[in-house]
Every structure is written in structure tokens, then in C-alpha cells.
Length: 148
Image 1 (cartoon, one colour):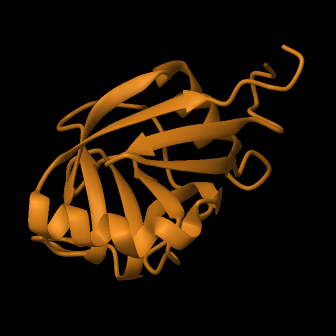
Image 2 (cartoon, rainbow, N blue to C red):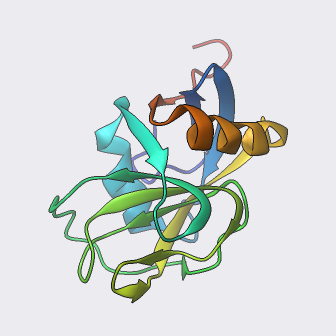
């Protein structure tokens, strides 16, 4: 695996659904480089409180020593954001529908570091599960390459 994340694909499993995402290594190289050592990542995805149709993974005061790059407040469904902390806690935002990234202190911008390209049709279903069934186990891992 290249340290930069170029060509790296993530396999994400949550609520019995499987998603494949590409790392946005050209647009967010530092963010991808900080995220990759966290793999495999097993945690909980919960319904976002202020951002609309999105789940989030809180990391509290985890310091990734990372600034902003390729950041947005308006991610499309499947555009995963990593917020590096600052005025709110460090977190991953997992949009499944209409989202404006925010916290109790107001609008935020997060680093768009990965984009779901396989399984995206299941994002609305994931949203219903988060809303009606609550927090879900989620796993991020590097997708095995064919022949490896």
C-alpha cells in the first residue's frame, strides 16, 4: 500500500450493508495519510445531531495534528468528511442524504477524504436504520486487491 493512499479503496460495513469508497488522496493527501494508520477501524456510527441526514463517529479530543484541506460544509451523500477538531470535537461525518455539517456552536467544514462509489444506493436505507434503530457497528478496512 502506498503511504499516500493513492488508489486505496476502503471497504465499509455497517448495519448489514457494504460500501466501497475511494480515498481522495490527490485532494486530501494529509488527511488520507492520517486516516490510513487508523485502519482497521471498528467503532459506532450514530445519527448526527446538527448536520441533517448524516451519521457521525465522534473521536473526542483526539489530536490528529491536521489542518483543513479539501474541506466543505455541504458534502453530497457518500462524501465522507474528517473534521480535525478545533471548535468542536474530532469526528468523521458520514452523509447519507441532505447535509450541512454543523455542531452546537454552528456550521463547520470537514476534510472530504473518501467518496463512496459502490453501494451508494443503500445510503438512504442506512439513514432509516440510524434513525429508527440507533447506533450501528461500523468497520472501515482497506479493500483487498485482486490477486493479493
